[in-house]
Image (cartoon, rainbow, N blue to C red; front, side, top):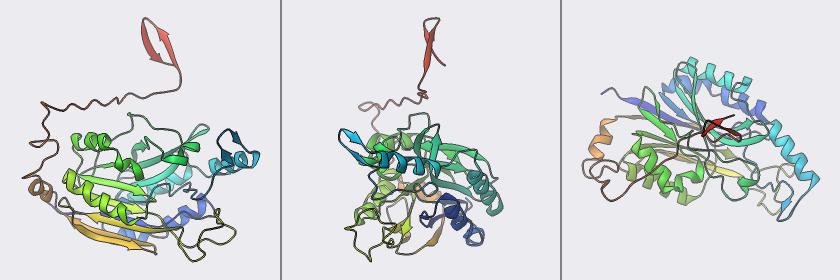
Length: 314
């Protein structure tokens, strides 16, 4: 089997906005091209931004007008799937000959979604995954995805799928993706803690799959940018930790901290077969006679109409 190259690009959203962040991504065009990578993963919420430290003026029982204005500004920096930012990324994918998985803040009308966008190596948007469970205060600003966006996508390197940040801690989501035949697990994130590295190694080893985690790196913020005035002056807002892991849970590249950078590694999908010799999570180790997993993959639009004794999408 021909060996392939998978990669992670560690950069962060620019506080000046989405257009500046896009320019930052495109500045790595030559590095991506020269890496000859077949799959490239970029961090969570890279286009649109992860508003770490913001509270959007919310306390239990009330919201402020200042918080509503902050949400408007955040919404304005979000991305449309058919918008110019995504078009620029499709051109990047085609030029570099790589499939891209990138975290964006997606506008769905006036609701925002934390989304992983899949772009093929010939420059087509082929799928998206909306974060199923925004974590903690993220629920103030992001809607919930549904089961219709849990894709497994064929690429030159193998079958890929994505779980965004703390979705990786959802056991049934992991089981779903294993059952769909994922070979390369993509984990866009902003989680820079040491325990994240343990979780990534566990998932790769549990699923006997390759794993690419791409985390944002954001340096210490200026006093004008920081939302939490108690934040240590010299501490990065997000320190990174992008990493690539083998089906046996071994670190192949990274983690890298406190800098922007591209990491890549050559892989052989035969390593998945060898790893599953003694533990195949959806094969000889699955016990379907005991356990059953049901997944609702129906899209859940906000409006249905009733007719002919059936529910129909409006």
